[in-house]
Length: 240
View 1 (spheres, helix red, strand yellow):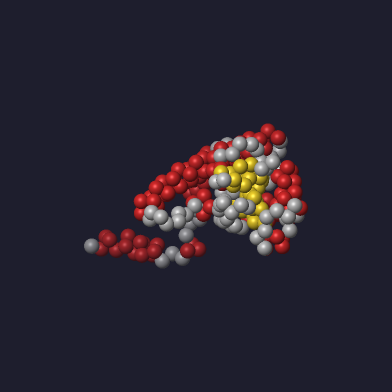
View 2 (spheres, rainbow, N blue to C red):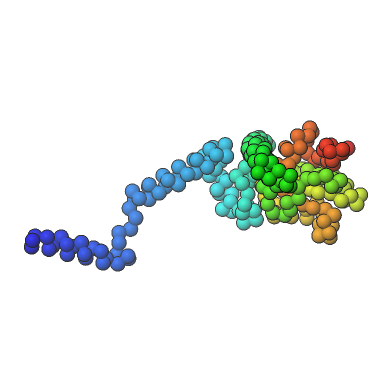
């Protein structure tokens, strides 16, 4: 029995060692942590269709002024905005279009399943438009048959800016839908300031600012942006 006294005393003493006296993280533990972080970065890069060095550049960009001005930017938008060549810019634009198309395709499939379930469980009641609900931020206006003009734009598109300026100058009530905004309210506000949208018209709802949230793809209309559309006899049509 006496032979157990010393080991037990040593164990009790070890339990009372203050935190500051505990050994510092070893080189091995730091290596393991670094490997875990690298594995996470590689997975995230794959999710966005990026190479490892591109993900590292995205992290560097978001640690700088870009991350302060626009903290919620996704990797493709950030890298596209800070592209170092036309080829880079084109690559990130194509990746983003593909990513948004996949997201909207999934959302449309779920909308159809949701509509079917709603019809079975609550026939006759007004259904929720998930495409509208999926867009958060400045406005959640769904495209409806109100007779209002809707204009779909993209940031950094000079013809888009000009189309909106013409509508505003004509005194036409209209709803702006920014494609590729990634639900970034600050981005739309900065765009509206740059294009000189009258704040009074926004406050009075003569002009509304909205995230696209997949609406443009859901309309399935031909042509490039900008697109000025209106519902005519129940169908959405592009206006000249």
